[in-house]
Figure 1 (cartoon, rainbow, N blue to C red):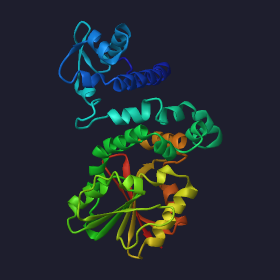
Figure 2 (cartoon, helix red, strand yellow):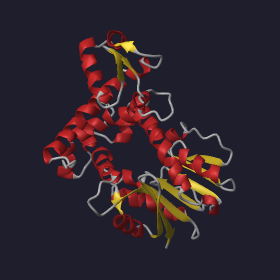
Figure 3 (tube, rainbow, N blue to C red):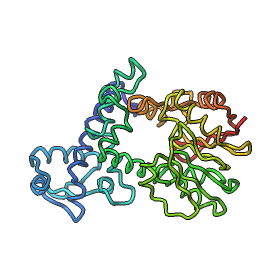
Figure 4 (cartoon, one colour):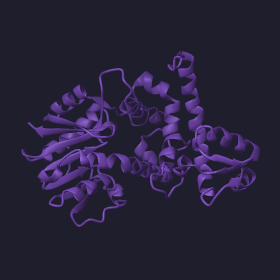
Length: 334
């Protein structure tokens, strides 16, 4: 029987092909090809005319992507959407458009940061800061379109991860739940929908809070800086995808603010990827590199989380896995 295990050469080639495919995917997303095909198949000459590109070159890109299941050539040089390419459209359920633009397009910072990963490996500092002279958040303040791509990308991720976080825990024991750095309130809204007796506090920077989608009389939206202080009086404090944005020293400052605000009976719920110690593939291992090059943050193992939280005055009571790459670390103040 012929072995199905790829050879070392095939493994390397698949990684190189992945880069080619990723950049081609970014290109057709930027050109809105899937949107142009929303009403039915079009000849590549018409697509090229609508997008102001060369028809022959565009055909070659679409032909290559067709071999991966993205787009379909229904007749010679006439292309239609597939279920996969439909997800490149902006206003469809499960859209991946913003996620692609955020990660794979030039100009939003992430692509550029990965391109200079060597700087991060030499210094353990974000290469994005080296390129732009400031951090990602300042880049977003200066480039509203990039900020919009980021926010839409986070919404895209939330569509799949948010329900798994909500379903993994019984939130009804918390009368008041504070989502610290909670963005537009997607996770908090989902949790409160399953716990009608609970109220919520959505806390983030003022400019983020102004874009909140919350329309819930059980949620109080507050603005502020979690490095300085966070609202007191809650029974649970959520930190979802917050600590991984920061080095240990910065993460300790955030945790310190939460610890000072907490009453003794409250609980901290850290919602992050927990990297396994073994050699197996895990999304968090790759997200860790994204955090390194883009924001000088990091993903952490269970031991690293326990150590970090202990330094901030917390003890991990339990770790709850979800049906996504995220886990819930439930900790009490000590």
